[in-house]
Amino acid sequence: MHRQHTVGFAIRSMSNLMRRKMFELAPPPDGATEMGGQIMGFLCDHPERELYQRDVEEIFCIRRSTASRFLRDLEGGGLLRRESVESDARLKRLVPTQKARDVHENYKCKTQEMEAILTDGLTREEIDQFLAVSGKIRKNLSR
Image (cartoon, rainbow, N blue to C red):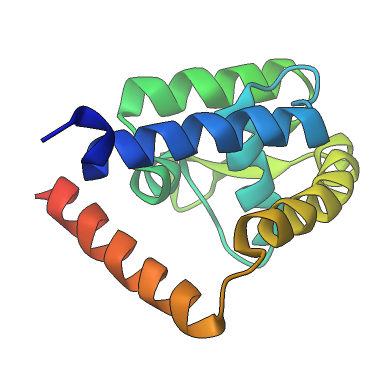
């Protein structure tokens, strides 16, 4: 079997193309990497939730040290505040700043543009099938 005909190769090459295209559409803001921008976006999209570092680790499937580095960079760039929680002094709630919310508004438009590019020519059934298959692959990788 040729390497180009494997699931892993297909996923990796699509990921690289997506990353490149998204950077063309909207480069990450100052103080954020691509992943930092995704984390910031998630925090901005869920203002009603109290989110903590462990949530970021779980949602993005990253290690504690990796999450800590991204959050530290966002905080240093003025995109994130960590607020103490009264019930547990060890916990720090992650709160996006106004600067982050402003940047995120621009990103939302670019993300919709990216989704349109990704799904161009696909039927709803094909999209649903892709999401189901990719969900199974993600589950396999989580074992």
